[in-house]
Image (cartoon, rainbow, N blue to C red; front, side, top):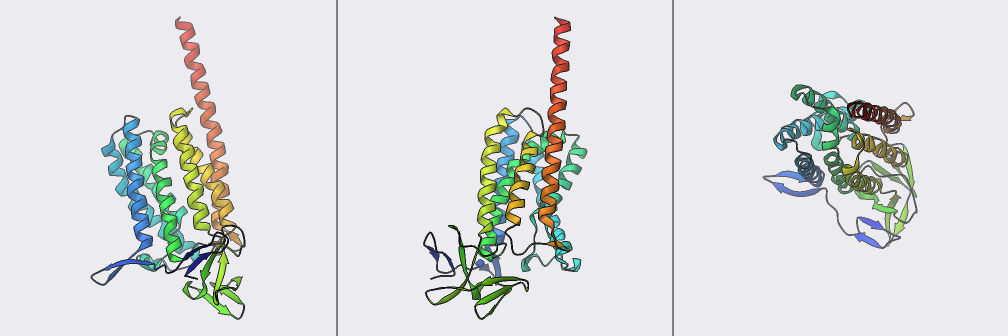
Length: 298
């Protein structure tokens, strides 16, 4: 058996290195490559959506650069704050430590500033970029696969993923059990005489969930009832999926005993429902007002 084994679907990956290649002695990691690919494809999708809706592509190109920088900064700060690390480690990104909710908040901050400066409709703007954001998230999660991180607790379900114990950073094996990051215990399972821990492949769950959400939003975008509808769908759909997936994770960021991402997910879902209702009722009221004016003029 290899470094990674899916026992119930009989897929084995003999060797999986975090490093894709090196340039002048500098390692280029798969994690960074997947983030870069996701960002590029996400920008392309947002530009296409801008063209479809008659908006300036150049304006969204300008925003993309600011959003990527702000998103990475937000993801790093979020991780450091809730992981209890020093903010002085901000630039040690190559050592790992990005949190997706921080990235979303960073991108949101950039969007708020951008639309104010350009005097744009925030809701229309959000609907245009949201599929690009999802695309970045879909690809970004595969970087976690190469890093052997962001996985879940023990499972023996159909998609159970066995990780070779001596390839997982932060895993200490003691007899027939292993302790991950000093607080999560896994039973050791043996395949072909080698020790593994068997986990939920939560990176895969989230990537596929986001892909399904992207397809749904893509199908609905031409039939939306009000500006901001796609953004509301994203917030509720992603929040719902992340709440479930986070409950399976073994490396949760916590405040006390409360998983931060589950709390944030619940708040986002609640907010999405409330905002969606308000926007729908406002659009319905505006439509009714227009109908009344048309009846009077006729």
